[in-house]
Amino acid sequence: MNTALLLLPDFALILLGAGIRRWMHLGDHFWNGVEKLVYFILFPALLINAIVKTRLDLAAAMPLLATALAAMAGGMLLGALARPLARLPALTFASVFQCGYRFNSYIALAVAGMLFGSPGIATMGLIVGAAVPVANLVSVWMLARHGEVGLWREVARNPLIWGTVAGFMLNLAGVVPPAPLQAFLQRLADASIALGLITVGAALRLESTPGVRGISLWLLGVKLLALPVIAALVGRLFGLGGVNYQVVVLFAALPTASSAYILAMRMGGDGRSVAWLISATTLASMLTLPLWAAWLAG
Image (cartoon, rainbow, N blue to C red; front, side, top):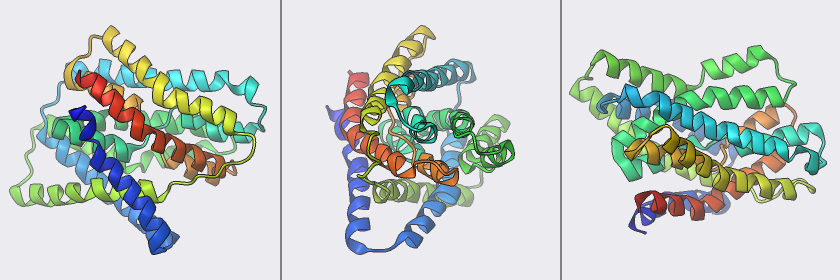
């Protein structure tokens, strides 16, 4: 229970973001600017700062990443199984399908940092760096209208991938940033978690297109319950333990990413239903993530 209580400040920041959005009326332009700041500047700094300072276990990296990708594959398979029962237009299904396996990187790094410090952030950063391209590839393929040029451009420009790669290369090269640069990165990293979680709360939406609630409940169960079970089983099969095992199970239990909404809207999909699913998984994860954390700690 003590481990679960550690996550309360993070979820309080999400609720604070929802309250600020509702009562301060700062407008979409403000929130878009804050999200860009977090996404392109603060979170890459957090990743680089954590990975450079952490001793990486390369021998454990492959089973760790294989476990994370196996959990995502399970979400894709379970989501596809619901297709015959959903009776939705193809583009609507393709829009919500991605909510069964995509993950919120802001919450991922916040939870890993809160529970495990820099080693947790570094481990989660490696998973995120490997999983983001896979999530984007599958999501764009399902939404079918988008050309591959746009897909690869999006993947190549993803700052979380570049932040992970930069930190990883510096770590392997044994580069230790000068003290002023370390302090600069630390200041940016300190700002990233709070602002990132506040923007998650500001993006919460509670309305969906009629007819999608059934599959929404299925995908919610897949994302928050089935995927962490898959990760727990596969992780044990691959011999994972300690921080690596706990982080990969928590990765699998994350709510859906806000970028799923952006992609659906870009490609003419059902953004309203995706926004509802993002919000539903985020709110439900306030219960399920602490329970998973407590189970792992026990």
